[in-house]
Image (cartoon, rainbow, N blue to C red; front, side):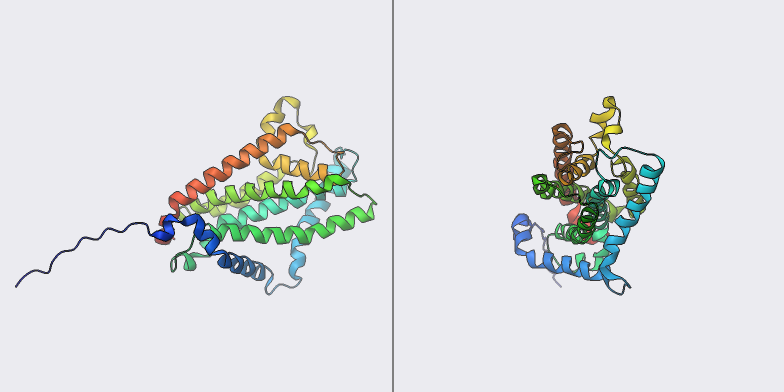
Length: 277
């Protein structure tokens, strides 16, 4: 009896893999679906719904006002302290939420990843959009505070989208890197809250970056959120608060590096997600 003929198969990347970045555009509807699903799930079966996006930064602002303004008497550069803090809480909360959601997004979509092909980068990118929705909801509180104190910005306010965009890419770049690590090393999910909590206190949210000694300021600017937070305050205050091109240029450089490293590492490990997850 003759033995069946032996065949050797070689599996190569298909057309979809070779046209990965084109596929991201082709799968844009999936991006919309995932983003909308995450928005709906975030507030589903909650008592106060979207107000959760307001309560967290508002309570943090109150604590910071009591500790840093009433007790420590830290300077607010001529801006009412509640506005000074909340203008910083907005970009920081956006970054913290976007980074945490992007970092955990692959684990939360394990079933989807293991069943069908699509550019996996869509998942963390869609999770960052949810944080942008929270940001817009919380921004209403800032408007209320400014009306209460009769404190209105000038043309500097038009720079806000640029700083928001910088925070978006900072969260996305860091989130892509940690998300790919989180797939293989699940204990990273315990590190993420610690990173977010630490970042809150080393970023100039409750205080002005001017209190940092001059010899340490360049080192301090290596935290990309310093320029984002200072930039928001600068735009809200009409240019009254501290902000300089040095911290902006350093922040942009760090964010670009974060995005490049994040995308490279994500793409390098992406093929193993379905097997490991």
